[in-house]
Length: 87
Image (tube, rainbow, N blue to C red):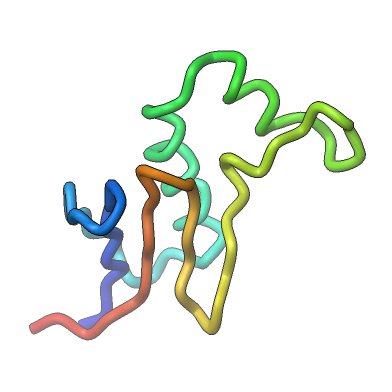
């Protein structure tokens, strides 16, 4: 069975591991990761991270990066997700 493993780090320290169903798309997992990452932001940081892409005030604090199927969002703390086989 495949599942998404989402790990939360603060610097290099693992703070938590979360599991999501493997049938979720990368877009759906990205949405979950953004919500988890937003817990650590101030309201004005969340607003700026959600502004239109061409806005000069927009930040990348909730931008999900995809590197060969490994998703990452945040700075410190940050989250990483990948689909893995579980028994």
